[in-house]
Picture 1 (cartoon, rainbow, N blue to C red):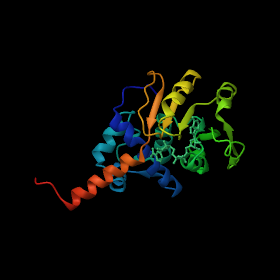
Picture 2: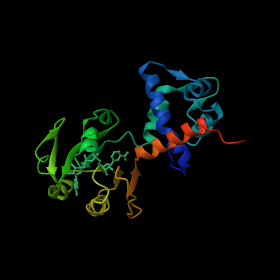
Picture 3: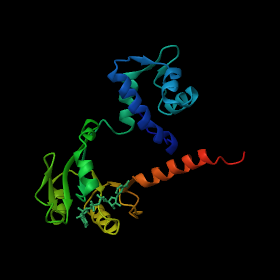
Picture 4: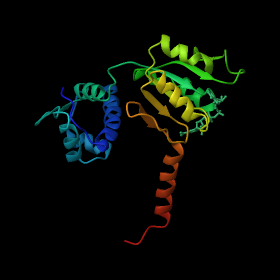
Length: 214
Ligand code: NAI
């Protein structure tokens, strides 16, 4: 399939389509109309048709969408037909929680190793994943095909570690440290900030309690 420019808004919606279609597959649903999908997802049917038209449609007039096919194709667009090796940098609360979450593997993301500076953590393992000393990270990256590094270390340390990772060939950074990373354009950084999501929730709650004049 030819890649064309897809807006960020559409890309942001694709993981949600993928998740819903995965749920339908688990329930052995074979096909679904854009209307039914729209009711389930609370997105308008025309929005769904528009979004999926970006990728050549996948739907048939009067038939709807073949759930398995659409799930597979959206998975390919999201790059989920590949496997990714991940390392986690920072084996504290968050790093350990990520390593403990086995469901990432179902999506093709495999945590291969965790790195930390704390000698009390080094040598331990989480779900069979070793925690190694940070000084071993460069060698590990050289010897293993590492695609993504998750940064779960203090924010003051994140920029330098990210720069090192980029120099050692890491192309994807999953950044949890609450700081902006300034790396060259060929490095893809995905920031995850739960606090920002909470702030949005707080805004919506206060908006509900004190609605603005319309
Ligand atoms: P933590 O203090 O439990 O863990 C941090 C770990 O990083 C420690 O084990 C420490 O030894 C290690 N570390 C420190 N310097 C290092 C270095 N140079 N190289 C490798 N490891 C190093 O902290 P927690 O709660 O796990 O949070 C980790 C980071 O994630 C923090 O920056 C925190 O602000 C952030 N965070 C982000 C969230 C988000 O939604 N994005 C949610 C929760 C935490």
